[in-house]
Image (cartoon, rainbow, N blue to C red):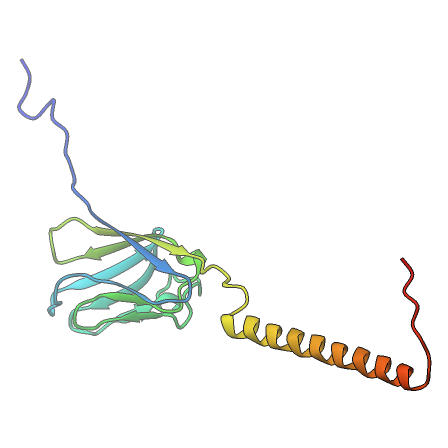
Length: 166
């Protein structure tokens, strides 16, 4: 006879959010709650602790201030002291990955943010640069035509004739 719960498995629901951002922009990963003095919020990037805040503000760290930090985010992380939300400034392609939010005083499951940082395409020449190049080329063509006309006129006054060979 089967024992109760013997053939059951535990299902842990994890709140997952996908976030896309362009390289160089900032992105805020929102906790969607306000902290209190009992809350401890920890942020992980690909399983490495990158930020932590205690509700009473007795301990706050970001990146290298946290013992696990590796300077990847040097001076680019901002931790909101009221909500625990994490802002990543001047994002880089290497910032793509899994960010995990753990609220220690809450029995809720961790919240996962899958962040994708996409490269900004090189726009090439701006319309102003193209217009400037066109103006220079038109001016060069006009100067060249003027020089040719001037030389033909000078040659005609001296009695020199040009022979076109075909």
